[in-house]
Image 1: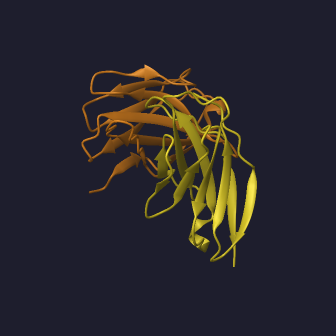
Image 2 (image 1 turned 90 degrees about the horizontal axis):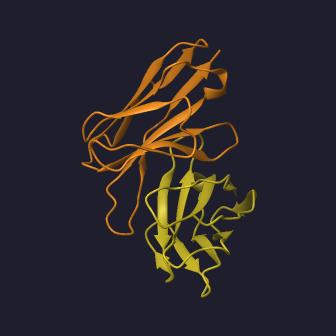
Length: 114
Length: 108
C-alpha cells in the first residue's frame, strides 16, 4: 500500500515549456486535490476532483489544467510554465466519510521554472 | 470557511505538553476544526478534528471552547519528532484552507 505517489520528485523547466505532474493513490479514495506551497507559506488549493469525471477550481487555478484520468490518477498540467509557478506541488486524496476528511498527501514535486 | 489565527512560532521542552492555540471567532455552526502538521518539507499529516466536543486520539487531544471561537491542540509528551509546522483549519466542506500555521520547535 503505497498511499499517494507523485512523479517526478524534482523538475526544472524553462519559461514557456510544458509539463504534466502525475499523482496516483491506491486507497480507493473518491476525492483528490492539487496544492502548491510557496516558500514560507501555507498550501493553496489549485484544483480538486470530488469523483472520477469531475474537477473544480480551487483558490489558484490560473495557468493550470487537470485531468482525473480514473479513480486512481489525477494529473496537473502546466501548458506554458512561468517563473511564478516555481513551487512545491502536493497531491492529496481523501475518502470523505461524513465529517471525517483526513487528506493523505504525497511527498511533493519540487518545480523550478527559470 | 472561517479564518483562523495562530501564533507564528512556539517552543516546548522535550517531554512536556505542547499546547498550540487557535482562534476562529467567525466559525459557523456546521464547520469543523481540523489540525494538520507538516514536518520539514514533507506533505502535511492529519492529526485530529472536532466539532464541539473535546477529542483525543493516539497523537493528540483537541480542546474546543464552549462558544467554539477558539481551540487548543495538545501534544501530551512532546518529542523531537514533533518539531513541525502545525495548521489549524476550519471548514464545513471537503476543501482545506491552510494558513501559515505555528512553527513548533521542541527543545532537547
